[in-house]
Image (cartoon, rainbow, N blue to C red; front, side):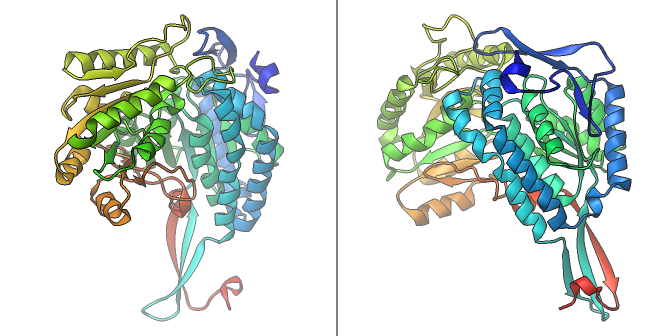
Length: 491
């Protein structure tokens, strides 16, 4: 079904070294629709032998091929071609997201056209060059060069496969790296479509490979001595494991991990803007967002009004099949995730929090891994639902007495990925933002922008993706001392 639906030429093959080839094993990975619980496709399941081939191809392309030795402007030409090829496949990307994750097609079809922008922006950065001339204290010149870090393993999660992969691939390609992409076994299709786009753009063989595989082969990839850097997005538990493995061999690593972000509602907040700013972060992707505003900190004076407004908005959300035009929220991605979210809901009730709305499977949906948008209140910050990442459409209201207490509650967590403040006072908003220990922070909502660095404090990760900082993460710095400048750096 997937080859016809998404126009994949080789749905059950691996993309290694510029060629589509079968796995050396006989097993495959079945793709299950979270909306119907039925099989909708099958892809190849790579083995460690296949991974060895991919790493060897990437290593050869980096050590001996043209890609790292091209100028930034030369690589930019290919990046723009990739964006053009992606534009031709917008609908395939959108349908893949809806088919595998349950993202409503009405939303995925609007988002997919923006994905090529990652590559055109990375092309713009590549054109700026990778050399900076500085005067040396002893005379002459120092040329500070950013060189590609080498072979990159890009390991991505299932919630937003194309966006998380593109944050790695576009910037790593711009830097001159070669890449092995390892998508989640639950959502492999976007990576395969992207491989077709990269091949069509004429990127040299070996620069980009895709292996659909299970977690055992992923672990083999991150441990391999032929990999110079691992860029990982996923759970904190997995990220900490990967970081320990990679750092043991002094490998480079970037991780974007979990979050338990706080939306701080101040006493002058516009309740309408609160609803507009929080709802997309709670029910978008069925709440399966690492930066979701899952803790809602409210002054006691506004608690009732916020409860009422958010509950009304949640009850209005149309939950259903992702390919139905009126659907606003689809299912959770797997049966395991479905069970996990309901376990957290039960823990919230058992620990004394009160459900304002939701907490059940939608009555009209007897198949699929669906859950109602759920809002807890009368909660404290030491409850499990306020401390652990649920990764579902579950918000928890916590009342506070003073602004100082709100800031303390927001910071009282192992995570530090995102957050926001709701107030009509810009000066007040910025002062609060500067006091929250988090990598990203919004005023009256949250903004997603690949031109700005994204990442976390504390156990939410190491390094940044997006922006110039994201490009720099795929480079090493070399200082070259010269008595005179080469011609291309003069005048």
